Length: 480
Image: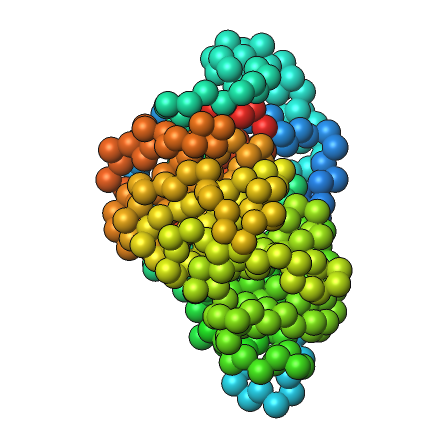
């Protein structure tokens, strides 16, 4: 009996000790889970602040220790369809940040949902890491010169005939679009390019090889027709076939909806231009109206009126003059300060104009038409005659001209038509001749929808009808 009582006592003591140990383990496990959760929140907050700081530095040009104007030639590399089409590359960290738009129209019940995804590209590094990379780049300058030849040499006059151009990885390689790319545009000061297709805006860092995704912006039920960077580079303005438009503040990460503009009766504001001085947004309305908005307040300050429907418009580099063309082929020249039409002339042979572009030095003026003809004028002569004769009528395109644009030196003009395959050409302006080797026998060109030169012509981007933003390196120019 005594032995049995002792055994029971020992078992009871052991059971109590085991229970105490189990309770201690549960408490310790809960503490570990709590610490893990807190660490994860702290890590997420720190990483979010790091991303915003890195984007602000990239866009505003605060990275003094890392040069952005020197380019490295992209290496020859085969395209990998599996990697380009894979969703695994979209966000390697699996982070999705959803924000609601900042609404200014209280009567709009159908609020557009805005979703922004972002990952950490190569530029999002610590300052010490970027400094080490900069030192490494300095050490390899001599080797880079040996491998790239004329890449670091001073640019001289661009030769005619064949242009020294090379295909690089697509701008949106890490995030291909599902529909036609409506707009490609380079940032005015940073090595960044935007692409717009359907309801998606993409921002990419351009390095010619990987072109990592910086951000994507999804605006539901808002098919983007036109997208432009603001002149300061902080904002992206987005327009569609509605009477409202959106402004995306890249630094703050906020999207602002601008409702119906007071004093503007148009129900569709799908086309607009940004003045180079950053003061105005110009929306092309119906019935010949051009609406001049303050870029700061987004309010209409004046409306100009043509005698025909507006086809296209462009500002001069100093923003003092505005050139617009109507579907009847008449070109209007406006004084932006007084809002007066100071000159008007007829585009020779044009029955329906589609595009107009002015070179940065205002030397050349180009107009495109429904028939595919592109007329190039000497601007000074065109401003002194109601019926000027073009320097050259380019007949290389046979379908409606979609876009014409000049590079920063006025040596190259790009033009395209979106209705047929490979309808894109580069023109050597000093001789008014077309480069014979572009585009080459590249089956991926397809139908070109839009194009743009980088600020110093180091790159050319072209968006096609299959969601690709193709990138080309123009080796004659050393800077981005």
